[in-house]
Picture 1 (cartoon, rainbow, N blue to C red):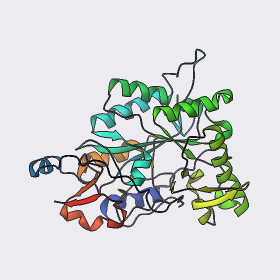
Picture 2 (picture 1 turned 90 degrees about the vertical axis):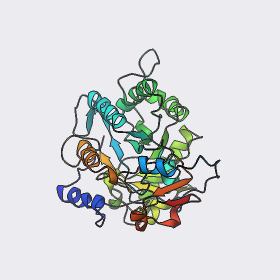
Picture 3 (picture 1 turned 120 degrees about the vertical axis):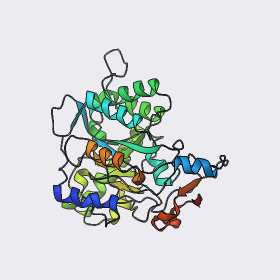
Length: 345
């Protein structure tokens, strides 16, 4: 299995300025745009409007940042890109305790974030489709020590913690246990998880020809469609965080006579992501937090957001309304509201 390059200290330091209003410095860029605009959504029934007292109490800020966590191995720490089961459990407990709640990547991209009032959304992503993320035991049950099993258990203990997350798949080696690939992908979809494109062979896309890039991206999309026909795959996690030289091929291309499209691309590292209505939001360059120990990783960023809660995205509880303090109105790109109402207070 090929691994990701680590984010350099310089890149991570510059990433810190996202939270202090400076220019975003990304890890090697890229993004997929099947639709570069967000997907139009049907208008849901309006929810009760927050009173002035509730606004003052909750103090929603839906222009704030959102942690998108990037996991690989969930095991005993055998590789650099591992998170032990105990530390993964600790991540869940800390996030729950600090009022984070999972949302889907689709709802984030659509600007239809459905988190309870006063809560901060968090997005779970898992790269490489490693067996420790999703494993069946010999009796056919989900291993309670794999990531999916742990998420199911946590959801059972905390029903207000939704089962949400995106698995970026290497289809030819998906989750080990090759005879069970289709079953695993179908179960992930049935549980409410999403599937994403991670190419066929996890290459450095900038080193490939246009034809090879389309083989890697389009080939993955085609295999995932064959394995999981009901999956809607329109986001890519860039191997090593590196885009191809011809970046148009991230958004769309053709492989084996079949067109593929992507609406967003996930980077490797290095900081919390902008709100989908922020002027800093770039769907083809969405940053993530690598879920490791040490500076610039999970605890580092959660500690910063705990010390500076006003920088967090704080939900007003209504996906149809975007509530932002008047002092932060200049951060909002009203072209990205996607039919939602902007409420300044």
